[in-house]
Image 1 (cartoon, rainbow, N blue to C red):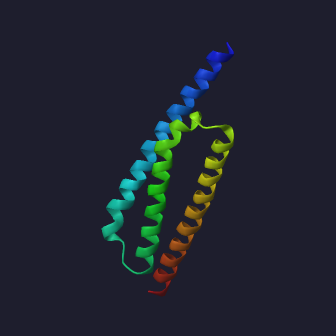
Image 2: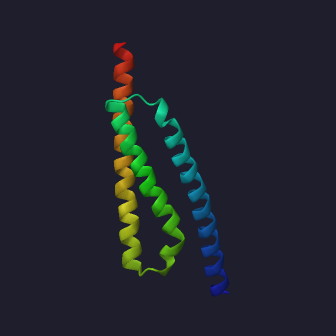
Length: 107
């Protein structure tokens, strides 16, 4: 019974991973397709940085189904790196939005 429960958890995790991969690839598509509409300058640089982080996340998400094969210590390191880069993404997004709002309020 325990083996069956383990397999079911892994299948659910795999389905969640596949959903996350589809969502991040859609996000990457949106970021790349919006790039021509983003003004150059500070917003353009922020957009490029955010797009690169999305590429990094996409690579990580695509590799996520293979994390089960890593030793637990390496799995924890990968999770910690995802948290770190996720935190950078949040800060960069907020800073970019702050700049956009500041520019709009000055206009």
